[in-house]
Image (cartoon, rainbow, N blue to C red):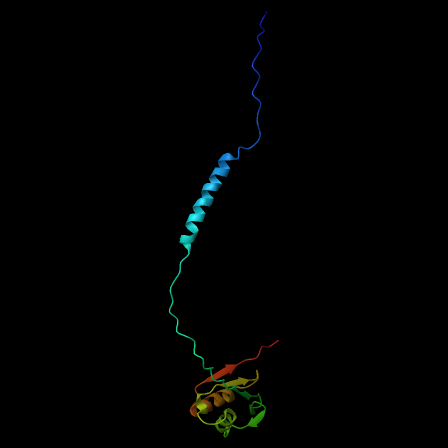
Length: 139
């Protein structure tokens, strides 16, 4: 019997990705993250005081003093004058220690600076320290 010599076959190429190393790396990373996750949480012990059971006293609504361009003064919807401004504001606040309450002053866009500052100075002279300024959006 005669033997025939056959040439070795060329190796066939395999185009599939070898996922075994990828799966090994992912499993190692999963274990690392599972072990280190509980260590990443930080807890602080806080000793908070108990909340008071008494409700806060209700705050009074502020008083709005409006200065118009003509120089007319209004407290809310009531007209007033420079001579009686402090007394009217105090009466609107309910009397007592009315100088400790909030008062807002607003003026029209055409109001002169002199009349606006006269109102501010009068309130300050009568002891009103919590005076706020309001403006209106011009559209």
